[in-house]
Figure 1 (cartoon, rainbow, N blue to C red):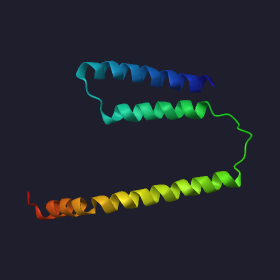
Figure 2: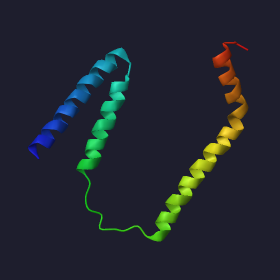
Figure 3: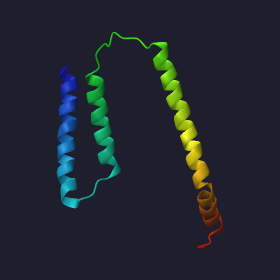
Length: 98
């Protein structure tokens, strides 16, 4: 457990040290967001406890409905933006400005 706390302390120290550097330059690079994600995942997995719960059939069907709704919503957006997407692809491959 001491090693875990040492790793968190090192990550927090490096996070604050890097944030001081970025405050000067006003730039946030990709590594900043990777560090924030990494620290968030460590905190998330460190705080996991047993739930002593189960998923009933209603929850499974709700998750299935959400997946279907996201897929259909994505297809609808693709349908709405299809003309603009075709024009963009033609511009990229033909090299024309208009």
